[in-house]
Length: 116
Length: 114
Image 1 (cartoon, rainbow over the protein chains, first blue to last red):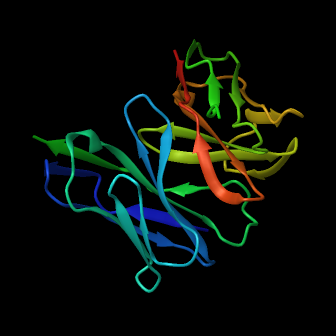
Image 2: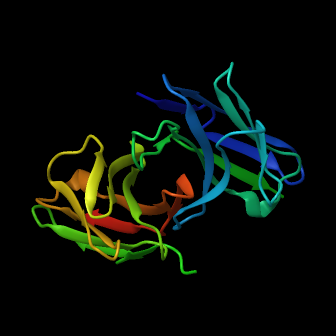
């Protein structure tokens, strides 16, 4: 069984400040890791993913996350946030082995609120 | 390419009724997964279909069922609705051959059970 823990349910931050949203996972098998973002009354949008290769992955809008296998973490960071980054962020894992078809296991979400 | 389309966007039902939700995946995607999102339980996996076959199922009662058609469109059905079934139901599609684990989500169907 897999589980994902997002350590902060809410993170308030001022505009242009840095932010880190923390994610830890538990799994007995190799995993793929994802961050999704959800704006009010919308579905989930893929922000970034780690499948293999470089442990540091980046998104087009300035977010980055680093896969740390020894600490089983995949924290999301942004050096300078904007008001438009206000949303709920979900960390998710899936089996890299491919037997758990189509299943993502999600954390409980972190609400990021950016204040002016 | 059009994204994942879910219909209807909003639905109000009463206890005991049944409901059918529809999901049209991104063109070319053959896998469709369904999730239930509630404030208390978060995002939970319901089931996944690929080529009209259910390959995986989450821990939901048998009142929750689904199917997939030959054009990859999928429906999920909930029978004998309960108040606790009120949720946002999300479907996601993926193309297993190239990006097997990358799921693209629709906007969801918000179901309210009165």
